[in-house]
Image 1 (spheres, rainbow, N blue to C red):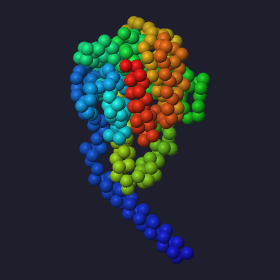
Image 2 (image 1 turned 180 degrees about the horizontal axis):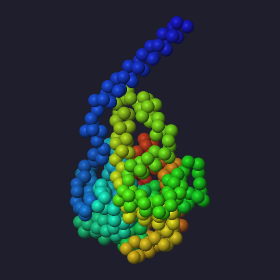
Image 3 (image 1 turned 60 degrees about the horizontal axis):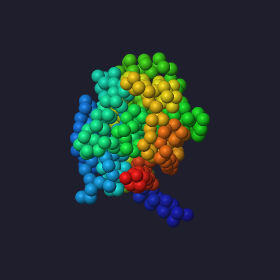
Image 4 (image 1 turned 180 degrees about the vertical axis):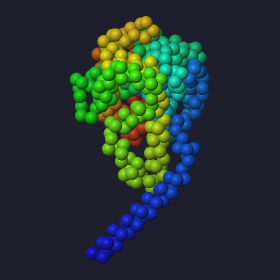
Length: 364
């Protein structure tokens, strides 16, 4: 009995020493130690706050694909796809011979409240595509859209099919009401919450703040898994506090989560009311710059990647695309994991990049 007590006491002392050592290490970590999105890239074009970057190749080999433009959501930063060297969709694609560009939408201020989705699709995105075509000599490029950026990319491909060689979508909402038909426990919380808002509530929110506050959306995302959100800074942190690599991984993810930009007001109204409320995209009623976005006009090859356990964009909302487009070269790829886990989890590393690269190589 005494021996057992001594063993337990010794283990407790070692655990206490590990925790105190970890907190001492945590107190020494500075912002410059927790950098994200470090893959080298160069600014090649700018329009207002939107900046187009071109990633440098990681070796001397020429690219095996034509130019690929990554289009991320306005709700969050593209930096999550390049979180750290061993958890980076960007690096996984570069090592597989892809020629990559990405749009940084910048940080909207109250002055940007009247920007619409029309401005982003027909303006900034179109300008970036034209710049890449002009600089590379291509007539069309591959679009790789993520989440809301995937919806923008699908709209662009429908309006400008001659400029899109291939369309790749990841965790992208298309049918915003499909969660009601194929509801799975724990999925579709965002859809339900937004549809519970009255249109005048959305108008009042934008009128008050000018934009859809990034802090509000951060709170909503935390409420998807409230217990996890409440325990990650105590129980979860205590589990990794003594492991410097895991601790830095945790801090990089938290840094990305904390950097939630506001969503321009008028674009937010369209996003929430036209799409989440009225589901106009699949009804052929969504209009940009006076033109109807007809998904049937998307005739180029399509790769549609979605997460089977996505609590933010349920898989059914993404997979609905296949029955709406005019392409005869359409591929669905359901992957295990969640909305962000598709890009940052240890299990997904290499899987998404290889899926995209091999699909493109087969079509070169």
